[in-house]
Length: 494
Image 1 (cartoon, rainbow, N blue to C red):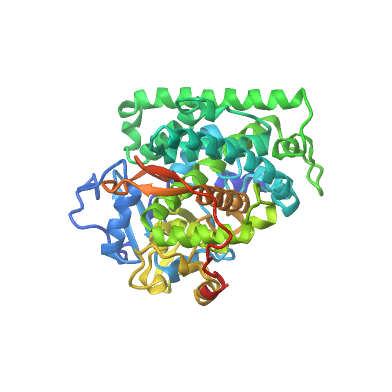
Image 2 (image 1 turned 90 degrees about the horizontal axis):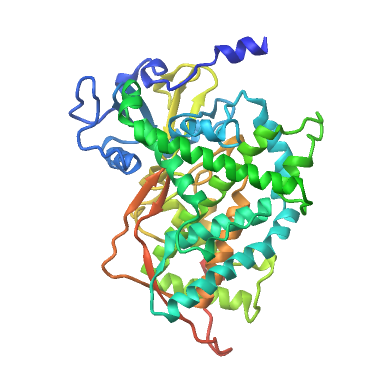
């Protein structure tokens, strides 16, 4: 029976007309071209930002079509809240995510809902993100951050600006590699990105571009890109296989890789297969650093553009951490305003800018739009986070006080979703938030961040979002006299 059910599940991309019986009720961009679709004015390199532009014009639910592929987008808070209902909807693996399956397979991020290895891996790995485990990762996070500040000290002393996105990528790759798998990529000793980063960026970019090409023409139009993608995937596989082999010949300290290799499911006794371990490691190395590096980069951009916010965050770091050289695990969570800065950056630019949801059975969305079982929609998180009905008329403005405790309690549920939703939400959320808050605290305590006045934020897309060309000038802070007054954070709602 189980085999029949799985075999009956739809395979491949499912265009919207197959699942939405009254698709005509949903608006689409003007000037739709027969056969080609809504491609006038579109840019294959920035589909998210194109969709944001259409969403502002067309409303909280709209559709786009290109070369026979039609997608329903949702960003209105009420509709997104419905799609977050786990009793009616589940994760849908589609678009660029499905394009990553040749390398990530049934890893946590790319597994289909019916694939058993997702639940097995989730149950085995969940304890790796407990408070106890997080406390164990904290010293390594500190050590990697100190590698970053050593690098930035040298750049500052030489009068150079720093490559924010490049250095945040080095930092987050080293953090997940060392804490999770005991591996050192030596990123800060390199003048160029580690080849793993180049291969990772290549696979993400390829996965996104593949969506914009008509399926019958893909082998012709993307022949060269496909060859490069095959080489990138082979490099990722070789790198991870070497990491796993190294661990098998030595002992670890109970990190994520140890759990994968040694832990059986507490109820069934099942273990992860070698192939699945490889896929999980690749998933964590990619997802565990790509999104966090983007979040840190956007946060540093906004801090450099809002010196009043940076001053307030820095004052909190000085007050909470004092003269402690290396803040303890519990001291990071006390940086409530710094965390608000991070959350507000993730609101405006969630580095995972969308997630897809599919109907568990026939249903009606918003009381208006019928959906057949397995019909799906793409929740445009980057627009959900800008819904003026939730965030106000100034939703495009950067304001960390949107995340003070009182404001958070007043907002409806399911309006802030940078880590996805439901059972398949990001398993490493607390890891990422702790790491990013720690890093921002360390950088704010050490440097004044100076923006290039001529820089205008540009966002590059490769399934995830990242500031493009962002460089900052640094000034080392003088030691803080004990007499410097610190603005109290409590008055903002904590």
